[in-house]
Each structure stands twice: as structure tokens, then as C-alpha cells.
Image 1 (tube, rainbow, N blue to C red):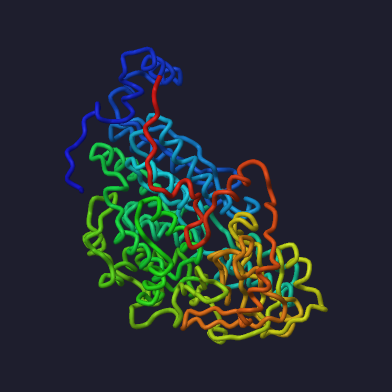
Image 2 (cartoon, rainbow, N blue to C red):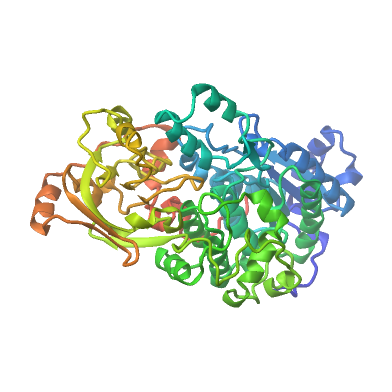
Amino acid sequence: MMNKDRRTIDQLRSQRWYSSPDMRGFAHRQRTQQMGLRREEFMGKPVVGILNTWSDLSPCHAHLRDRADAVKRAVWAAGGFPVELPAMSLGEVMVKPTTMLYRNFLAMEAEELLRSHPLDGVVLLGGCDKTTPGLLMGAISMDIPAIFCPAGPMLNGKWKGKTLGAGTHTRKYWDELRSGNITQDEWVDLESRMTRSNGTCNTMGTASTMTSIVDAMGLTLPGASSIPAADSGHTRMASECGSRIVEMIWEDLKPSDFLTRESFLNGARCYMAMGGSTNAAVHLIALARRANVTLTLDDLDAVARQVPVLANIFPSGEYLMEDFFYAGGLPALLKRLEGQLALEARGISGKALGEWIAPAECYDDDVIRPFDRPVTPGAALAVLRGNLAPNGAVIKASAANPELARHRGRAVVFDNHADLVARIDDPALDITADSVLVLRNAGPKGAPGMPEWGALPIPKKLLAQGVRDMLRISDARMSGTHYGTCVLHVAPESSVGGPLALVRDGDEIELDIEARRLELCVEPSELEARREAWRAPSPRIDRGYTAIFQEHVTQADQGCDFDILQNGQRQDEPEIF
């Protein structure tokens, strides 16, 4: 796999554009020179694409223009020809209704940008939640040499002597504001204290979960995912990506050469040890399907039962990504997992995993815990099944209330997010701390896009009583920065007739995380009668990309990719006329 003969220039795909003696070749060379490049600067060189998801509305990626420049200078120095191409930026928080609606759009764009241009290899610049899986789904399907260059986490936040994590403490202090424990002036002051630098969320949200996973799978330079965005080492890492991609092009080292089932299981083991976001359960399956690798929710649950949470990072723990980096970062965490990993797995560095983690050290045993002293008794992920979720649902057990790990309560049902917002704080709402909040029509097709609505707010009247967690169930997702006893990704979703569509106010629902069980305690005959009476909702949107999304998106347990992109077939190279 790693011992290919080095390619010659005439074997590179870019030369179909540049070396042809006909009129088309003339036009390609002519137009490149139109941009001020001398013929000698691009002829006879591997062409490196730099897919950049920078945007003025993506603060996590505010530094990626500079990182693209670092990649370029290294590509030039290594004898390559770098070209930067903008790709859709999916900055969390700003993009509505949800970035998840556009992950597949980015994946398609990345694949088609790579196919339609004279590129021999690519450096992918991203890191905010959906950009990592989106860029890599496209690159895996295109299957040319590719390196993922992660944006890196932001610096630690501090307020009044307390450590603040992006997202996690937004939710915590929002509840404190609603319950009257902090003032409006303090709330405003918090806005400027939590996010102090460029870079992705400094908690173990989806961003650091996904970049860590793909680091463990060998799709980044070893350990790249842990470097803070504001650290000068981050710029040097980007430069090294530029040098390495040129070598990978000559070696013809593609994702298909090293992505195996064991690579994905290594990523899953990393995921669980990091206490990662439930969103990764969707993205990892989508990535595996693009690589023609079999990976299921049951595989993830099996790994979660074996690998405890070792990274002591919010929301499951007490520290932030900057602390994790100083403690030794991902290499140190993987060193802790050495006995669990497939150490022979390789990646873009060409080294076996066991080789590159061999010298790793942990410098703080409280930030990166040993196996015998995990951060939480609960696993990072538990896959639940039962008559309410026949195809599976997930819960982040490590961030849930242990007192609710086994719970039975009466359902309070909201038909959609607008209904939730309108009624959740109504003083007349018939609800107690033992009730089960249920949100439906929030899944891939129903919302559409499966937004991060799964951390349903606690009713204001219960907050006033001191309640800070309840059992909450939905076919939506939840931000990886959030916490609480939230059952998510219920499949099939309600809008396609999943059992969640049949729940009524007052029905009893039973959760048992240890037994991996989620049950609607209603007689089968009654459920069958309700199913006979159920009518599918009409699609909410009937034009444009969203209509395409609703028609082709798969369910959460299948990765929420488009069915037409998961068949494993490779498209032919474009014809050049």
C-alpha cells in the first residue's frame, strides 16, 4: 500500500489539461498565464488545490486565509503549483436553519471542485463542525491525494475567575439568566469573554470531536487537531501540509490506500475516549459509507462499552482544548489507548499509528486520565433501541444526569420547534420534573436538516424550582457543547412515520441507558390504531436545494448522506474537448 513507485509528471491528472499540444491545452496554458504566472511557474509541476472554507461570517475560520498562504509557500518550495479555491463556509451559529442542511452541499461541492479542475492533490482547510465531514466526504469520493488541515480550537475563556467554554456555558448561563441568578448586564458582559480568539469551539463539541477522529484515522498530520488556532505552531503545521501534499502526489497516496475498517474503528475509539459529540455518530457513518467501509451504530456502541471517557474536557469534564494541548494533546490520548488501537493502521504521514504515538507523553493526568480513572461513569455514547427507536437513537451518557439513567415519566409532546418555543414557558403547561419532553418533526426530512434542537429548554417554572435537567427525546441533534439527559437521532424520524409520530401527551416513556432501551409504554394494538390514523406531513419546501435534500437524505442511522452519493461508485474523469 505504501510502497508505490514514484510517479512521473506525465502520470499526473493535471497534465491532461496542461501538457496537451492541441488547442485545448493551449487555452489552459494561456489562461493560467493570463493571471500573471510565467509558464515556468506551473508547467511540469504537480498542481495542489487548497479548498478554503474561510468566510467573514465564519469566525472559527477567520485565520484560514493566512493558513492558505502558509500552505502555498510550502507547496512552491516543494516544487508544486498551488491554487486556492473557495468552498462553502459552514460557520456554526450564523448559518440558518442549520449547517447540517448544507453538509452534503459542501461534500458535493468539494467532490466536484476536485473533479472539474486540473488538481493532482488537495489540502482541505476547515474545522468548524460540518466542514470536516463535508470536505472529507467529497475528497474520499474523489479519491486523489488529500490532507485535512484542521482550523484548531480557540483559546480558553475566563469570566470572574471561572473557566468558560464556548457553547457549554452559553447554555448554562442562559438558564441562570432565565431563573434570575445573573443580571442582564452580566449576560452582556459574558458575550465578549467566552470566545477570545479565532478557532473552533474550545469545548469537546463537534468541531474538536471530528478533527480528533480524522487525526486518529490518519487524515491529518499526526497530532494536528490539538494545536490551538492562535499558536504559531498552527501556521507551521499548515506549511507542513503544503510540503507533505506534494510528496503524496508523487507517491500517489490516496484515501483509498489507507482508509480501512480498522482506521474507522480507531477513529471511533478516539471519539469515545474524547467524550465526543453525538453528532459524530452521524458523520462517522457517512464518511465510512463514502469509503465503502461497513460501520454501524452497533459498532459505535460496542466501542463505547470498551473505551471510557479519558479527556477531561467540557461538557463531560472540567477543562478546555487549550489545556488538552498542553497536557500532550491527541498523541498522549492515543498513547493511553495503545492497547485498544489497531497500531498497524497508516495514514497520510506514511507511518503506522503505533510508530507516531510511540514517543508521546502525558503531562497532566487530570486532563488526560489513565484508564483506571475515567472522567465519568457513563460512556460518551450509548445507542438505544426499543419500540420508540427501532433503528436506534443515541444519548451522550457521559453528559447526562446519572439520576435519570433509568427513568419513566409522562410525555409532554411538541409537534415542532415553533410549538416548543410558543409553549415551553407557559405557566399553564402541565409538566413536572419527572415528565419527558418530546420534540418531533425535527429530523433530517422533517425539519428539514435535523437542526441542533435536541437540548430542549427546561420550562421556566421548573428552572425556578431548581430543576436543571430532564429526560428529553427528539429526532433532532444536539450541539456537542451541550449537556443533559437528551435522547437524540431517533430513527426512523417522525415525519416518515417513525414511532415518535405516534406519541401523545400523557403516554409513559421508559429509558434505561445501561440496558440500551427506549420504550413507549403503550399497548401494541393502540399504537397500530394510531398508525392507521397517521398521515404524513407535506414537504415543507418544494424548490431548490432544500427540496433535493428532503428527497434524497437518508436517516440518522445511515449517516444523513444523500442516497445517490452512498453507492460507492466513482465518477469518471471529465472529458476535455
